[in-house]
Length: 374
Ligand code: GAL
Image (cartoon, rainbow, N blue to C red; front, side, top):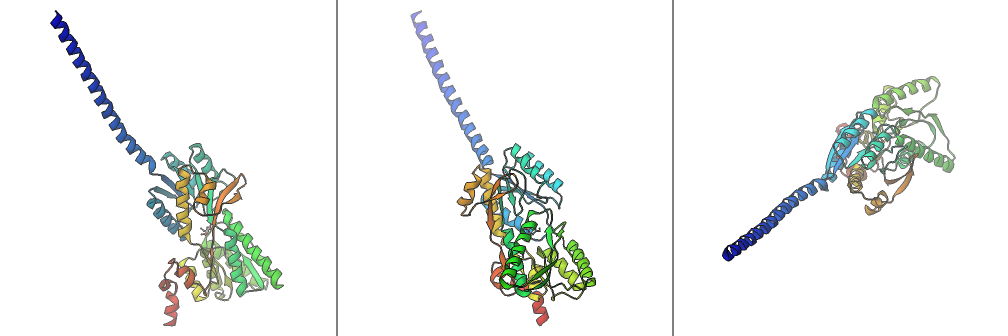
């Protein structure tokens, strides 16, 4: 009996020991598995997904904005998905919803309509997703951040360039897309330069027309300027300068001038340093463009987007990237905004700006000039 009892005890002890060992092993196996899963989960979570919403590809610059943005974001380990709204704000709002359903961590938006794009911010914030407005402001919403070139400065430089070659006379001020906040800012800058010029020189600028376009559209600009030229001719008013808001619309204005054999005789401004515009400048049919180093804008925006997605505070982001944060009121709040410097380009400094920066090659910019000289 005594022996039996002892054996039972031993068996129980061994069984208990086995159970403890088994439990411990199972515990660590489980932990190890969880650890692997956690790591995978963490890796997935670390890969920030950025939704980039573009308004259009119609104006040349936007494809380059996208390429530079993607390049920087991917180097920083983020994934970029993008959609182009083809000038339709409702479509862009839907694209934003799709991206939010796909689980993007941040949205970067070039809006079409400065007001109705506000819906994007509302939907994004419902999912705790921050929004960065890229190049164009979105009004009347709780926008997180805004990055752009100084648009008033763009208009100021355009007017300065024109006033240098036409210090007095009759000007057409052609406004950009009325749906774009930048159009108003560019105009403010132009008017500021004109007022300063009149004050400093005592010379007078007569504004023949100052209406805005519906879209940043070359053909709309051509048609509009063509109608104006006919009208002013009938009224015996000579046109001396056209402040066109960007290069594509400058192209339209110059086509209208050409039809009247006035190309090269009327000063024309632009913006964006498109290849066609740079060629027209060195050939003499366009007076000035404003070059915006889009690589800086896009790569800074990519860094901001990642920081916003990580929950960093907008006010601190600007400083951490070495920029001054401007507080710009959008009708609802003061939006922390970063302004980059636009660059004035004429025939004189084409080589030191656009070409030196690798935006366009010398060969391409001077292609026709060489043909003419040959
Ligand atoms: C503006 C932008 C310009 C120009 C235009 C046409 O908002 O500031 O650089 O490209 O859009 O898309």
